[in-house]
Image (cartoon, rainbow, N blue to C red):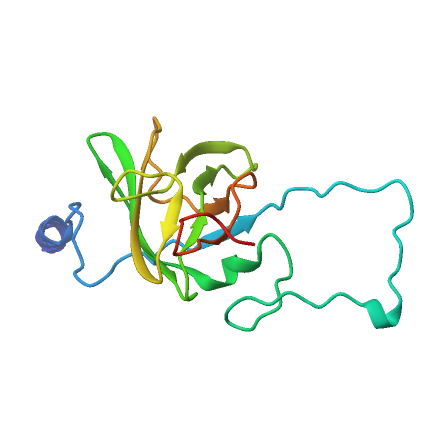
Amino acid sequence: MKKTVFITALALALLSLAGCVNNRPIKVNGVTPEPTQAVIVFTPVPEETETAAPETPAPSEAPEETVDEMGNIISGSDHYIRYLYFKNLVLYEEDEDTYLDGTVENTYVKAITCAVDIVFRDENGREIARARLQTRDGNYLLVLQPGQTTVLARILSDMSLTDLPFTLEFDKETAIRPVKPDDGSETD
């Protein structure tokens, strides 16, 4: 009797284990990874230093501070970055290349020109990939009109970049400044 009970219990245990094992992955709808956060970096061009001590103007001769058309004091070469907002940046892979699509919102009253790179680095800070953002017409010098402008980039790499963090770096050689509407030349 004990032998029959043991064999029956063993058979039931084996049958219950066989019915509960499922090694296939299951897709859970509605669960998506968090969007990658972009970090915007600006490296200003170093200014030339004078060897002689600069002259200090008399209090009555103090220069007036320059303000932009929004009433903010122009504080340096990266002043106009405050008016640019990168939104809806999407990285995706197609045909073994990585692409970026997104928009830049210019909240300034005039068009702003600049050049921006998307840069991927590994955990040690070494650059893995870099690409220059461009507008739909293929220009790498971005002329961002007030409102939203679509930007894109093709990022050449031999590895998947879609899950890696990235930074947006303004080109330090290209001025970030508004454009005069009358002749297209840049203003200060």
